[in-house]
Length: 344
Image (cartoon, rainbow, N blue to C red; front, side, top):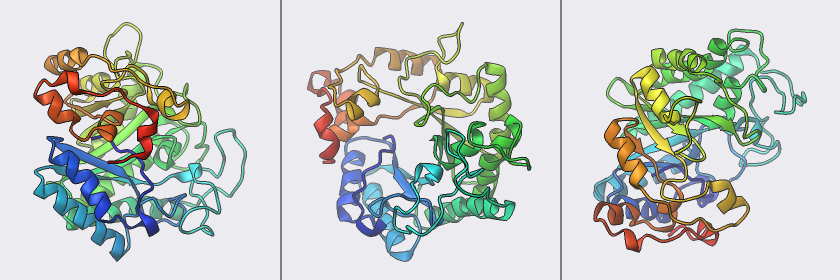
């Protein structure tokens, strides 16, 4: 199950309704659940007090209950550790007076709106992810995912459009990858060798859908190598449409290229089972028709990637994976935009 923001945790604390939401999917043959983004202990990490936290005793107790319910239903679960960075507007969230963290204090349009953080401030951003990962280990999660995609904080460090630092965290692609790599290293130290670390990353950003970190396979290999050396176990490769090739001259999608270049396990995601990407269905409120799963099966059999993350289809129908497993394809529903608010 792909991570999907819900904003259904008042005061940042996931309740029994959140535990039931995830347990329903685990009980219906979803093998691994990656939770909605849950925010780390930097004051500017969250823009909404209803987004769940991954710090403070009450929030962690709520997540422990989620883990226990998912395990009782036979599933495995990872928290997605999240910091929104400059995507979070100042003055919002549970700590409205806290500044919004960023690599350089500039917006994606290049406007300087706050001072560039010091290296010591960057160091605490990194350690905040590791502290959250240690909490995940202690309360029984099976694995942990770092959110490094979609123009949020980690991706802002990756992105030359928002990272204009002149120290070890800015400049070259290798330096811009260092922030994520240091998070992975500290996370590994925090959780030990037996807990897998997933990094979710993307070429595209919410601020600029056409932006790409790597224009060629050679650039991609250079970028990924820094993260592999740091200890990533699984790359969760976010695309808007999984069937689209990442580079000219090859049918491999992003997850396929990442696996080819690194040898690491990969997760593919992006409109699985649906004919259109999520922008049209969630933002433009257009229906998305079902799409055949034949190419997913074929790509899995070829070893292009190792896991498939499903978002909107599982959001509307918690039994989607079970129906696919049992060949009940005629029972799969078309996605309706109004289902976004159902969360059943």
